[in-house]
Image 1 (cartoon, helix red, strand yellow):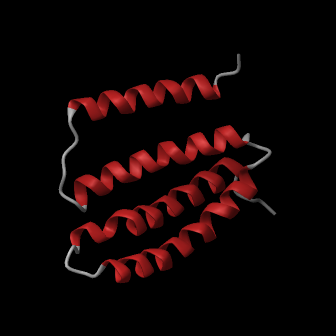
Image 2: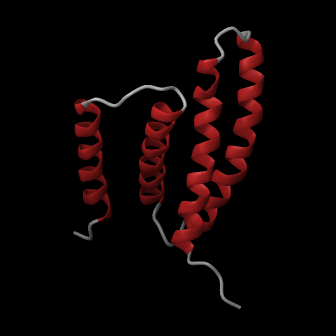
Amino acid sequence: MNTLPVPFITIGLLLLSNLFMTFAWYGHLKFREVPLITVIFVSWGIAFFEYCLQVPANRYGYGYFSAVELKTIQEVLTLVVFSLFSIFYLGESLKWNHYLGFFLICAAVYVIFKEW
């Protein structure tokens, strides 16, 4: 039986978990009229599904990736998902300094994943 490669499963689950968490943390910003307590409980409910994806992603990926590499992948995916969310959902735009910061983060990713 053929199974999907570990990186594909791990990164796929981390990507999906980031989608849930981004909406849990920032989706309510378009609904400022909703009471904070309601937002907290709705966000908690959304975050539950994020954990249902994040934990298996880390469990499955650990061993193929180190813990530091897993965290690095998660952070890069968070920035990509949040950037798209910010542009398309919140209607915000990215500025030159955001792109520069992302470039520097990519440089950090290179340093973390490079075999020295």
